[in-house]
Image 1 (cartoon, rainbow, N blue to C red):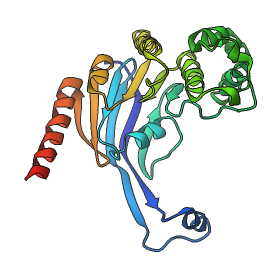
Image 2 (cartoon, rainbow, N blue to C red):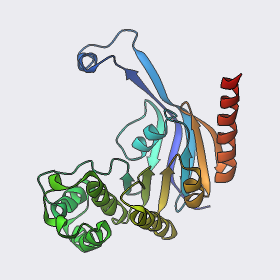
Image 3 (tube, rainbow, N blue to C red):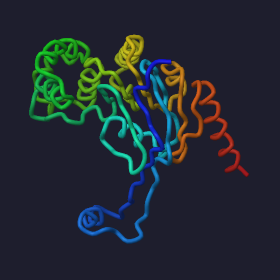
Image 4 (cartoon, one colour):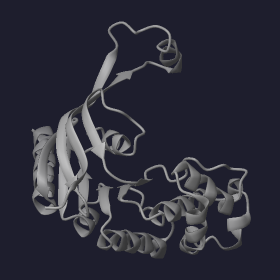
Length: 249
């Protein structure tokens, strides 16, 4: 077995639920009394090894997004330890970090700087990103003139071409038309075959099967099952079927 590139040790995360923005602002200065809370992750432990592609499955609210945010360093645990050994690229919010007044080409450099890349390296991958995004002359136009799909294409192109150690994908393959979606899937497969570790979240079971030999099933912030994707999806789908049958009674 190769070395672990991502390790979660007894990780828990609880969010306070606020009634409105005013209550959230007030909490910056005064600790709320008896607040409503949501335990997004509860004592989660697992290891993901270098070169693995692993699916994360579960219903909305299961804790999948919180888990991915912790791996990318956007959120932090209340308890436990997270170790990530390598450069992480995330296909979560593909347009996050763009400057609307800067051109697409300028935003390639901006995103590169945010990711800690150096000028020489960004210049080396610049044309590869531009070719992948298929934006034509728009690459030298302000991003505010782009459609939402064009912004997502650029965001996807940047993240998949920076040669990350870990690529985190959250339902990001709904980018553009059918041929571009296929191109995105093929690129992710190419990244996997090159030895990059991939974490993939999708509600599409066939898509998870196609990309990930192993999957982790989360329910209400807890790891319910961790095994082959076929086994994991069976446990997940059996639970969903049981819940449907309960509602019918």
